[in-house]
Image 1 (spheres, helix red, strand yellow):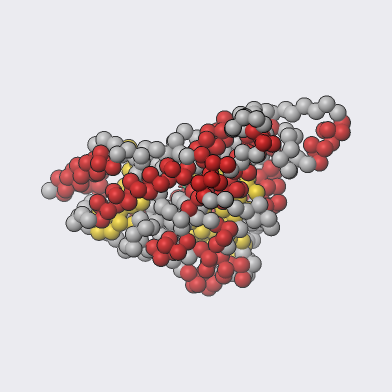
Image 2: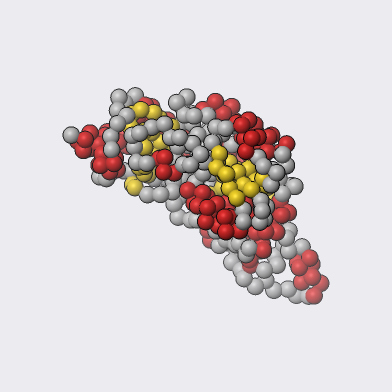
Length: 391
Ligand SMILES: *Cc1c(COP(=O)(O)O)cnc(C)c1O
């Protein structure tokens, strides 16, 4: 089945939908049984998409898990109330006191914080590594290294990682490979074909796609699925059927939305790249982006999210750029239909294992589904404000 056909059909088995097109929003805490036999059957199979108790899911969550597994690959998908919960729970499922974790230096900030503030307390040590380390990762693997965690492209600075090489070396040393695959969404990078053991999505972003739901997923290989699933139950992770319904609806348009985000973002990125006052465009599809060759080799497409670095400037000019936009709203997160902007004056403050090579401020844009002419007008005026603030 090809990509777009898969997107239309994912998770829509008759078992969950009956005779209508979409699975119902099935709300439940208690599930009631007619006989001891039925109750025993549900209890014995409670890990296996059987109605048992609300926390373990209903047809809405079973359908959504199936959909994500069909799109990402792997043997099963655990659901969490946010992308961050998916990351922390996936890690906690496989580490114990005395273990060591390798975390990419360009990880999403709350992922870094979790290592510093929670794993440290549990006696689990983290080493941050350069996203472009490639084969050099072997030298950082210790006797007690349990997990190699990747995020590709990196948060804010967009470095694309050589996932197959990193995964191969990690496996040679018996480490589990986890990837934050949010930027690619479940359709633009196939994690399990590139050696990943557990793939994580902040479904909050493009899967939901409308900036109205928090949701996370972790999909695992057959080897790792039982332990991931069991830990998600033990930690009491569950998700609302209303939110899952919205996420499922989001999936149906994921392909066409991403195509449009990609097209719009490439036009805007080319406009920015052509400007004299911009030093570098950090968009994986541009060869100015570190790791661009791995994007070309491994990804099936891009999306609306990228960054750029000014040629000069300061914090005041950055603020002048950011304030007063008409279409780009200032806000964290991304992946909805609308355009967003954030600025970072001190990128080095987000990194410990790598040296950030630029002095000037950085801007990250999420290009939404508006008309690009309006977005470029908005940016044009922002650049004018930027320069006025420098006079
Ligand atoms: C947003 C994001 C997360 C966290 O997802 P939440 O649902 O906001 O907790 C994790 N990783 C990446 C790359 C993200 O962009």
